Length: 427
Image (cartoon, rainbow, N blue to C red; front, side, top):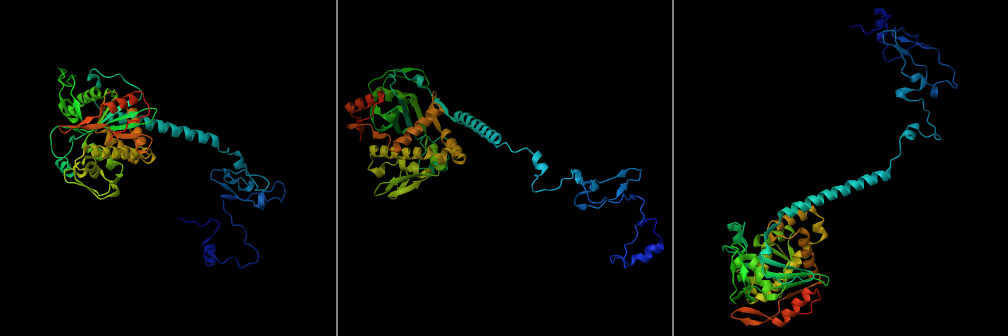
């Protein structure tokens, strides 16, 4: 295909081919070559009001081969659809004049609404997710002859030696043994009200009377015979319902909610928050039965170590009262660490902690998440010094059972019922 204009002859092509890139040797410009698809327009007018901007020379009009002329608009300054705008420092760009200014007030409003909606959706979703994980297995409606409820709220918090869900390796690692069933390893009453929170440990060796009760499974009534046992025997005999019945009968205090956690759940919660800092008393602590082996001073305990700490007994001269003090001390420290902004506002900590705890908690049928939150915040206040922690007042022992001081206990229960500031002290 020949790309040379038809007006050129071979002689023209050969004679000019050797002059590419050198320009013309003559002083005058060469005459215009004739190209049929290009038509020259009229001579450019002298500069004036109608002249193209910046003295742009008149450009050719192109023929599309069908008799239709095409002007790119360059002659009038309307290049690429432009309107012939001449920049002027005193005249703002019309394109920017036509663009609306950002409505920042509206943007902020939309962003705020979006974030609030997202927060509500996540909160509601988290609530129903957490609520579905609670094991509401305890029915306090089966407890008979209950004391009248007083002011404030009373929680019975139980640590059991349940090994449910634990493998053989877990039992060995946590020094739990392999006993069947479950027993209470610790028991506490937590009172929350308008005059601060009070945490009262009930030693498992406490001497109590088993009253008349209705079997939680059989529904059969068992008449009381005046039989005295250690407090943890009530749980072993007929579970949480009989334990609540026994505590209420022997103290006269109404229990509003029941919360229980087993060995594995306790250790998992501690691990989920990255361990809990505790101060080991002078002389350290060593107990081969619980696995405790700690030097004196502050240290962070993981789940395995924490379980050994709260279960140790023989490192404390076999004293159940010293053991309950350690349990109070650790549970308060744990609650203090869980109920912090760094955990509550951090989903990477909050969800594992909630999952580890809620999966293994056993509560009563009327227990809700807000009740559980109230319990944790109350325990935190005890740890922070805004509440009171104590053992049930003891007056002595009989046959290896610890006897409660009846006079002090009566005064303590009266103050709790009336939600008054507790003045009674325990060992």
